[in-house]
Image (cartoon, rainbow, N blue to C red; front, top):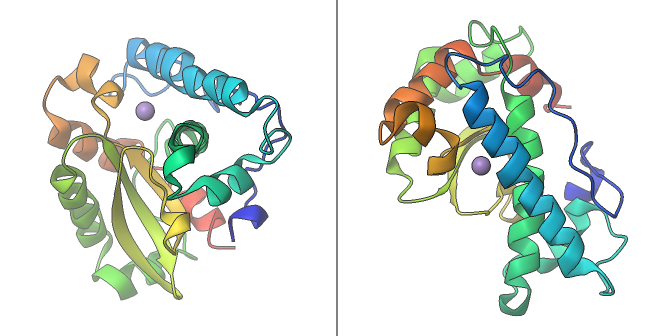
Amino acid sequence: MMSEHKMSTASPHVLPPLPYADDALAPVISAQTITFHYGKHHKGYVDTLNKLVAGTEFAGLPLEKIIADTAAKADKTAIFNNAAQAWNHTFYWRSLRPKGGGEPPAVLKPKIEAAFGSVDACKKELSTAALAQFGSGWVWLVLDGGKLAVVKTGNAAVPMTTGGTPLLCIDVWEHAYYLDYQNRRADYVSAVLDTLINWTFAAENLD
Ligand code: MN
């Protein structure tokens, strides 16, 4: 499943460009947050991954293959963490867009209603999962067995290794919101879901 994903990148891994300007998500997510989050955190995962895989059997492999091959292997934790975080952040940037939120596209909305009852109920479930995630991690809308579901993962973990195709994600590491919201994770997630979430990207990932 992962090897077929559209986001595969060649090695050495490169930091993909942001899909919008660093101030395009303000005021919900400030340019300062994006500058650090993308330019320091995301870049750091990519750079560290390149150092870790150099000269190993993982050199030259696509990101998704590295993630699949190192998941749940105790002696490969550092490579997994950096590969997964490189992938997760690229997916996160694309899960947001300026003037997002609103109504999901017609191809997605009935699936949301079938799984959750309504778009608002889906957003509520995403918010609840975000608050329930203890410490750092991610909240995901996934397609699993033909049905949509909300899952949360800790630290760098990804849904693909346990089943489920990611449709969109929200980063709930403190670095994603602390400059703008301090400890108020609920306010960050609520604002993201109302005004930035990219339902169109989620719909594209149904394919
Ligand atoms: Mn992050």
